[in-house]
Image 1 (cartoon, helix red, strand yellow):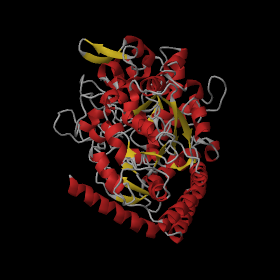
Image 2: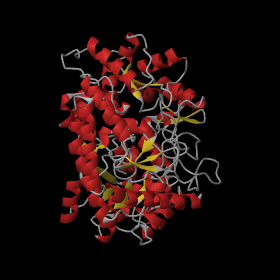
Image 3: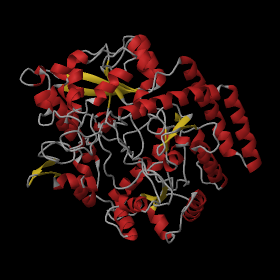
Length: 588
């Protein structure tokens, strides 16, 4: 997943958010709860390995989880946290996280210094299997992986068939099978600072030109932060490849990418297009938008040298009036509320006709490209599988997302719900809340938080219950809802969808990426060249000072892409995608 979320640069989505902010749902069968199958009444502790009970080792086993997909964004002072300590208590496993980039992982593979558990994308499957870097999990399921086998079993079937490098064995497990569920509002769209938008009298925003005009007026009236830092409309970063250069428009226009950034799929039709060479693509739409923004003085001039951490720091400082996703800029909102509980200095996604919300997609096999595996270097493969199994159980997911029963949530009047003290922490997050770690493992659990616990009928992520969302609305969210005459912010966008004026991802066939074939080396080389051409060319396009210069640079880039083999790569990807789509269609 190298694209929009397949982009695999999905941060914790506060992160993720947003967003991350994120994404898939399960097929139902038999039990009425949207599950395909059920180890439903059996808790993770009951289904765990023999070593999980009285036979726990005196000292916990330290397991390292290495991630190439930037899943965690962990602050060291808040690790370990209450959730990871609970896992250590239950399983006798202490978790350590290692973040990799491509180069770091290559070195690890070459040296054999691998973590116990590895999270990668589909592009590593052949190398990991043929290099004997990961172990087959088939023989571990009976004793250590009962939840893996029982909950959403289609995931296992798919993995053996499509993620095994044609071996028919179980090496990789996709995370987060299950429904998307609710969030307060969509992470994508035309984002603005609500307090400043309100100050301007709620001007109409119907398109990108309106959005830029509003941001320019905001910047004119508020050119600096309270501590004197320069304010911009937006910024970019470069350590995730082309990700930041097209994500906003990609989501808004109804596109996602589960392969290279060069190719995107329409979430409504499930057809693939060329993101780099098709000038009607979200990439070129966003480059035009960014060029307009730069000419208006709205784009941070450091955009072409910044890394994601630099971008996050500026966003947290309030230097951006908008962003590519709410979960990148919400830290400023949180800090503002901590200073003033009534502050309206938050960001909102405005309801705009024609937009596509990143919501309501579904999958029975899990998030494409978020692949958990146990490496050959695992000091205890049994404990590694047991840990994954716990995170793929209903009890384990409830703990990872909702916290500790009796401390964060409990059964009250026969209903699973967050406790008042936990809700108060959610309303005004501070360091003590971060220390609890609720949601930090969100991207590696096996079931989405919007799924239902079979024992108590409550959401696995009780923070997403309607009653909690209502109680934990920020001042900005309450004011936004009041202005539009709704109870919850998401209902503003939902109303547009019901009127047929906006869209979601409910038609997206998210299983398709899970059945794509391995990318041949020659295509990988072409795709790498295409990315390199775009990363070098996009700043020039954005910085062009006239329409004539813009067109000249654009045409030069298109010529380079053609010479680098863009058409050859697209032909391969289109056939691979169409064949995978046909396979998924035949299985439904």
